[in-house]
Length: 264
Image 1 (tube, rainbow, N blue to C red):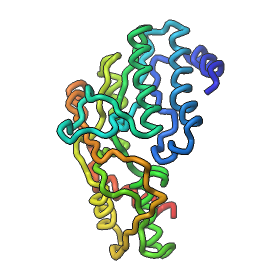
Image 2 (cartoon, helix red, strand yellow):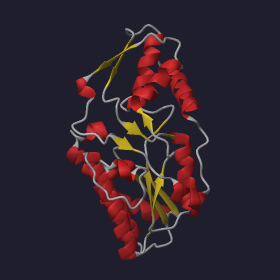
Image 3 (cartoon, rainbow, N blue to C red):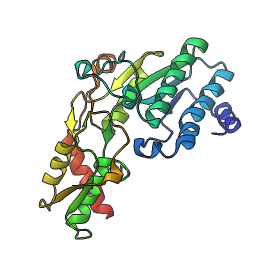
């Protein structure tokens, strides 16, 4: 978050493309790390945009990684979520990403910077840190398989519905976005398929070597407020890039379990 260091680096590198993925990405942790969140998500982004603006570099293409969390609690009549759905963030993380999103639009309109905003929906895959629900479940399952914990999985709210994509498909989407999406525009990057978290946990357990597992609620894993359903429309993004997911959820989960089997 050092503006001088950011500016110096940009002057030295003179990039043609910037994928701005850096920042804090945990909704859960955002409730207790407000000032760190603002520094690492909002201020760091402003430092980057200011460094590009100072060079008057309108040719450098910048991809801002935004988030479906910005949409907040959406009426079921507006599912799947379109890009013009109003932003109503309900977590500190979501507020920080909405702020980044809007600054991206403002710097495009005010200074002509070539900024593409991608609102990625939930994504997961092997090597995902255990702070995130599905990776945490996968790790717990592997610990049970290896008799390192009792056959109990602790969970938070399993009733929410989320639109999950394999992280490898999301990264491929970012590359295609840089090549084909229009500066100034915003795009949803998602599978357009909704999964109840309880059903996803069932799929994970079904791929385990140990299926007699008890599931118990852990109140410490509950958020103060949660969006009940987030499913996006990827029509605009697919039209611009011809992207479509290559990994199904079963393959993603198998790779996640195998990753944790190699680590636990």
